[in-house]
Length: 239
Image (tube, rainbow, N blue to C red; front, side, top):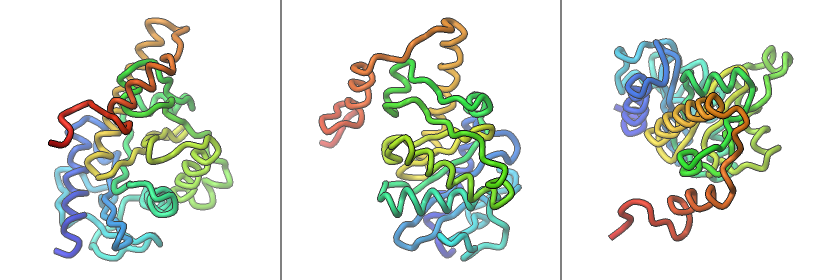
């Protein structure tokens, strides 16, 4: 099987969407990127998860053209193309996987067009900022090329906020839902699950205390650095 490695990686990651309760029916997709080859494997459009196989994953290049595969790729493929070209290639971030879901709590914040506040250490263990949320796409953008413009909106929002996609690995698209990425397709799924959980925690925090304030910066820094900093000590490390 050609492109066997990324096909298998994409397949296994896509199967985690229902396993982690990140989407119903066919409401999500994951891709796995081979930067050297300039292609990625992505879920075929509209195919239920139980019917997927590694062979059914579609291989697409960074021009958005199908290189190999018998099925149509995900309708969100142009968004993946933009994010890989801008974040993984142009910015050089170590991104080899992207996921889009319609998980309930993350979508709730997206539909409110609000970033997810950084209230606690669970959130700070993963990113040092609130989870950004883009504005709505303009009418012109929707009419032009909806999925590609969704990618452009994410990239433009990150540029305007001066966010580093290597550190902030999740975003909400206003009125739509979450996109996440990671060093592997599996890690992208992990980040999507984290986003769903912190979105739920943030909502519950506001239900308990509507005037809750952000976690102090010194605690945010401590929790992030102990996992991701130059002197990180969380976990077993290398022996």
